[in-house]
Image (cartoon, rainbow over all chains, first blue to last red; front, side, top):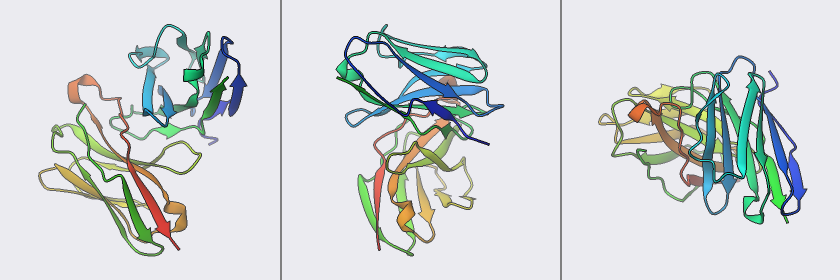
Length: 115
Length: 113
């Protein structure tokens, strides 16, 4: 299995631009998570999908952030407009059982730099 | 969310065992104890998890105290590739949030050659 695939691996953009991060979960997994990691705040859960439906988006920082999962094999995290404080590594993870009872598989992350 | 307490950092020598402690005095009866690690410039990686009994897998062992208020991750022979941040996390059916894994700051393990 290829594991969780994220793209792009690195993105450098200017403040105000739209950023779209992509994730392909492991086939057969029904739970998908977006995390953000910064030095100051560590790893934060942004949003959780189960069977393509957003279950908990309480970690999404503000309206500039949106996430979609149109089908079981694809999810996007969009930031519009982007700001320098959005600079972070964004991780996508998938799971068969949900994180509390099973194993989360993380992608390699998308490193975002907003100038 | 029930919280865990870990030392900020630990050091070990290569090929020696490492015992990484974690305190979780507010653990609920349905919380699993999870361990993940994050190598430099990589995403977190699952290590092991357990509920009440000690657990072993190819990567590590998890020793859980009888009262479940603490646990220890055991790496039997540390290698340089084990240098990483190790996270101890509680996750389970507490409050219906059985999907959530809330990562703390973890323990930075340094392995000396």
